[in-house]
Image (tube, rainbow, N blue to C red; front, side, top):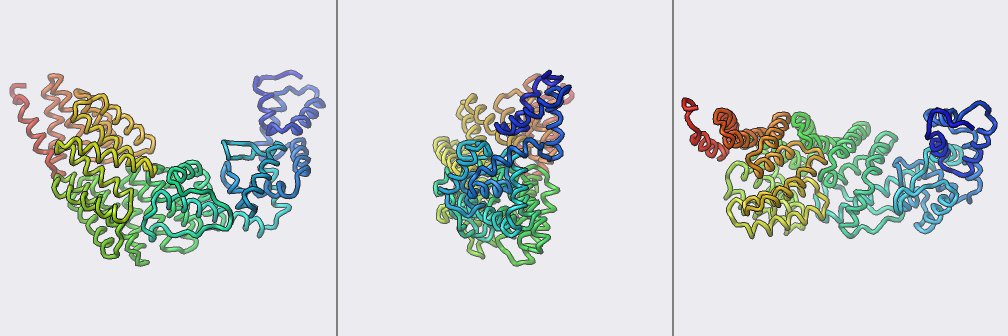
Length: 554
């Protein structure tokens, strides 16, 4: 038979048949009885049917014959696996769907693989070809009562939420139970995730599936599962998976609105706000935070109020409104202390210390970091411990205590990596870069900066992308390229501190190039911004301006 215009026609036909031997033989018979057709014509016909989600008669016959060849157990496993909303799954998911033990589930999967009805997507993970999934889903509708199908999916969703909770317990053994509800163990088998590294690997592997489950449960009648999943994953997704956090929390908000769950709406709105905050959409974040705060107050949830007030403080901080930011964070701290929430208190102290450091109150910042370190260790909160160590390391760098700084920063980086906190990891790498600049090890500093910048770009954090571009510009002085890029981003997201820093760097670059007029223009813009922010850098920039030749001389 002639090939036709598509050189890949044969490969397309094989793909559309799911590479099932019996299906390919039946399609070959159809091809043999269609004179005048090319292989490209047959490939196009199968493509059309695939787009219309219709099985070719030959493929359907092949699948039906393969299916009927199976024993009842693997047949049911195939039907229920086709209902899974994710693209792939592991034996634990099949055990949950079928309410079977793990050994039996694995044996059924082996049968399906032997009969070419299942494909391995990765070690220990399996997927169904679209043709097989469509066929098996049709069989499920015909053979399994709606109540049975719903019960199977409920077991799966219970498994997903409970296993995610177990993973989060391993990574964050102490966390505010009001923010992350306690989830009972499911009745079906679950993997051993007591080791934090195994827990993080599971979360990273299952993240696409968990997002798909959140979407499915929100739109098909399991709103509580959506809300629990969003709250359970909040800290993990907030560590750098901001698009997924936005998707999951948006689904959670819609689901909880339909179910009139006020507390669930508040948590979802807060999560949406955090995702916008991390992606430098300040106005959107502020609107969601204010809605969440009103709902948390309505239901009398002090822990929820504290988190939202803290995040409103972050918004004020990034805009350089430090007195307002301090007020928000002090309100959050007061709420957590009144409630005896030691984990929340540690987080608040770290945030307040960081803000005091930005405002130039270094002694107060060091005291707050030290208090945060004591509280976080007493509470067993490794995340806040990492932030406190990183903050103390930064203060050590600026004070010239380089040995102590290295110890603090390396400890912080190790903690961040253990819990998979990509954003904090990038921040620690930047701090290490500053340390190596001070030590005169510019190449090592640039390496840390570049690694940090890559992470911030990967997770879509433009505020910190501008920060790292400025750091690279300062390490490679004179450097206009990095500072100009930082300025463009900082102006786009409204980050005035990084705008001022970029203008200062550009001023240095023009000064070093013998262009005093251009240097003055940038220094003056930096001075206006720093003066408005009320930070010590304003005096430093005044010194740069004073050192320039007079405008008359220029």
